[in-house]
Length: 171
Image (cartoon, rainbow, N blue to C red; front, side):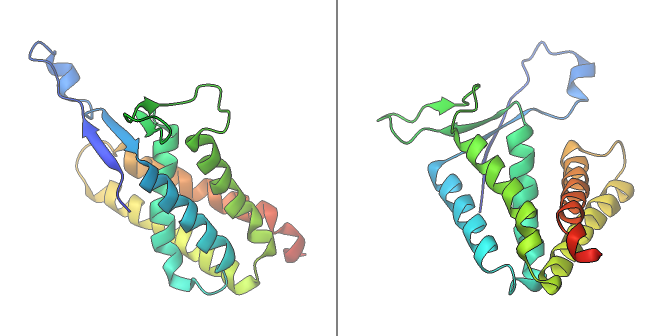
C-alpha cells in the first residue's frame, strides 16, 4: 500500500540552518488508502492466528500509518465532495484518522483474544521491526530520522500494549 507524499519545496530565501532540517512532507491518505488500511485491520483481526512471519509486513504498514496519524502534515481526502478536498477533522469526530487510530489500538488490545502462538509471532515481528530501525539508525551518519525513531516508538508502545493486555494469560 502506498501513501501519497508531497515534499514541500524550500523557498529561495530560506536560511542555511533551515536547509539542514528534514524536509516537511505532506502525507495524503486517499480514500483507497483508507479502505486498504481498513481491510488490513479486518484481515489482521480475523486471520491473526495464521499470519505468522507475515506480521512484519502488517506492522511496517501500521508503523507508517502511526507516523501519518501523528504528523501535523498529514491529511485525508473527503469522498463526499465532487472535487477532493484535503481535511483533517480537528474535533476528531469520526474522521478517517480517528477511525484508523482506533482500529490500530484495538488490534493490539485484542491480542488478549489471540492464541499464544499468534501473540508470540506478533511480538517477534515487533521486535524485528524495532531491531531493523535501530540498526538502520546506528549505521547511518547523522542524527536518526524521525521515521526510524517513530517506528521504534511504535514497536515499543505496541509491545507494552500486548504485554498489558495479556497479563491474565501469563499468570
